[in-house]
Length: 397
Image 1: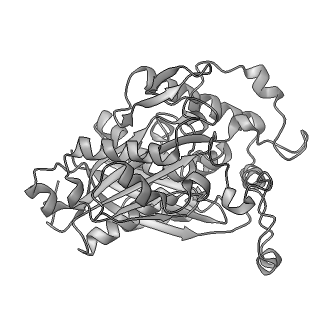
Image 2 (image 1 turned 60 degrees about the horizontal axis):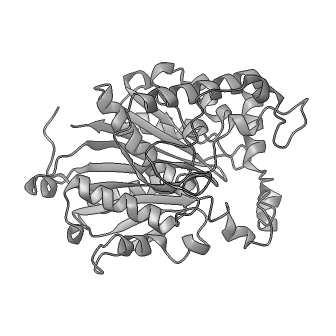
């Protein structure tokens, strides 16, 4: 490994809570408590003093109710940070906390600060998805209240329909989507059973009867799959004749939080803090708002070019499994070794707590790289309305 410049931005620690199913073990846990739990664990594991953190940047999608009012600031105070530490909450939809990581790295890289925390949270049990759009007056069924001029330019459908169009584009069958989903659960179960998730922070929860438990695993992982039941599931929107996307081959709505500490290499080493990784590329792109979820392809291309790498140079790839068709489209396009594509399963199995997933996938990726003694990892996420974020890191520990 080449010598690292003292002003290089490095990742010092990354954690995530176990992810709970919507309405599951974390249904009674406030989102600010979820985020505070991740922040407390991050500080404890890294050894950084909270007074040295210059900013806390949080991703959160449905910023209303218990997730409104700048949850970053509220959660850091709940976690016991000094009142002098500020916080900001941002919404880049599913890529929110991955982008928070980019923004934190940029602030440190410009030497505005020595240490910053990027984090994210979503409680889909306690704050319905897109409550900020529906205002609690109805369930979210699609982006039907967009500006008329925007709709004239782009007929933006529900993301499920975009996932259907991606399946059509790549000629993916219903069986292929379901097969991929079964494999996601199998990989996630294997990683869980082997105790590989060093990044997971256990937290209190409740069982179905309301009894206190400790949740130290991702609740959405299925030990067995009833394939007959899976095959019988109706498509979410389309008819059985034309539809392929079902609840079984889409990501699970979840509750969870994650946090990543970034810092200037020189400042970190002076304090005896040990870097885990450095950034080789950080990318955000816009893409077709109608297909919506295909931005991961140009984002990956750009990230690989910036890092001076090819897909075959990577040791671990995390593609957020918003839908099986998204991950399979990526696989068709780039043809990576499928063994390094979501090796521990993805959001179809462990869940997708919107604002928390980006930071959570980075924490998972770093654990994975260390487990396989790999060096280079890519994280890429599709985003609603046609965007994507991509990050390439080089492991240092």
